[in-house]
Amino acid sequence: MLSFHDTIVAPATPPGTSAIAVIRLSGVDALAICQRLFRGKDLTQQPSHTVHYGSLRDGDELLDEVLVSIFKAPTSFTKENVAEISCHGSAFVVQKIIRSLLKHGARLAEPGEFTKRAFLNGQFDLAQAEAIADLIHSDSEATHRAALHQMRGGFSKQIANLRERLIDFASLIELELDFGEEDVEFADRADLKNLVLEIQAVVAILMDSFMLGNVLKNGVPTVIAGKPNAGKSTLLNALLNEQKAIVSEIPGTTRDFIEDEIHIEGIRFRFIDTAGLRHTTDVVEAMGVARTREKLRQASLIIYLFDVNQTSERELENELAEIRDLDIPYLLVGNKMDKSPQQRPHPQPLPEREGSLLAPPSGAGGGILISAATGLGMDELKQRLLQKVRVDDYRPTDTLITSIRHYDSLRLTRESLDRVLDGMATGITGDLMAMDIRQALHHLGEITGTVTSDDLLANIFSRFCIGK
Image 1 (tube, one colour):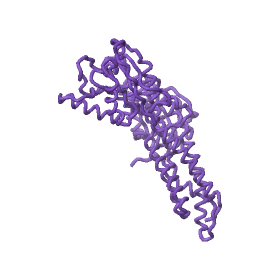
Image 2: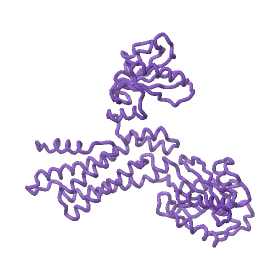
Image 3: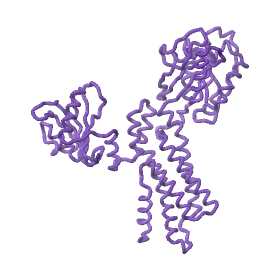
Image 4: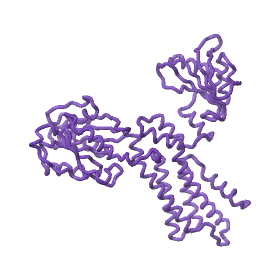
């Protein structure tokens, strides 16, 4: 059975060959176990946050020449004694050193156990611990900023402030229950209602941020759709700046979807080139069209591409009817501006869908005209895609919800507070109201890993000294 009193060890750098690798130990005996292999200074006697050169030997066998960084409790990441061994980056060397450390008293760490120990030892809360994983996996400026903000406690401070204010009122209501026979009211109901409405407003803002936060974290699934030969594959190649998709004048060349991604000013877009939308008797092409419709339903954003030289205004209206019915934001793009532009019709692009976080800001206008083959209008297209995500509304100091777990806890918090408001309107008893407030506190506490019941009891006894 695993114990958090054990000293754990694991490589802190990815597997493979590199110039150096780092092996991390954490636990009461981390420095002592490392010292059993280390030839140089006595690591157990050295000050914290120092680095020491020496060699590692298991008996008479030289393992490697290394640098060992030591961090003494409680001023380390895990708040335990920590030793980090910088050795040569051979996978063989790393495994040999770890085997020797295991032999001398360490055990292999479980996945995420260093961060888990840091959380359990009070280094940070659960939301901040999750932000560390987001930071490690960040692949753009936007995801990096969002993870840093959460890791530094921006989100946690908001949640803690909401809980603290709600606990104050919960304590008063709990106190009323102790004096139930005397019909006293310590918690002013008007003040409680105003507080709940204020908390609801903050929760709503945080929940609304989830769509953008999820986009920043996971990318924007963007389907390129349109009739056959509209230039969808050419557009995908132009966006990726490589020949990813086969381009042909023969309609129906794309039978299945092709997917790849790029970053546009820090936002990851996952572009999906699909089979052309049309009725066909070709069995294979029909399967591709069916998959296209499935991808459209899964998309967060649709680029609807049409040939400006071959599409009338009425045809375009009919083609877009299916797209509008999906209730998914779309960008209307007229293609092939390089081919006889003086002969092309001039359809008026239809207004784009509003009312979504991914919808364009007010006044963003309709579709645009491009030539995917020559690159004409591609910069404008990228800017319009960014407008769809509304990244300009996001400031580095804003809190963004990027975790579905956090979103769900906020949703449950809102539902509990809705019941509080409903109960106040119908005049329910204090014990039922206290139950709904406890539920709200519980769900807020789930976000940061706080134990709600202990906090509530501690607040009652310390603030009111009721002596029970």
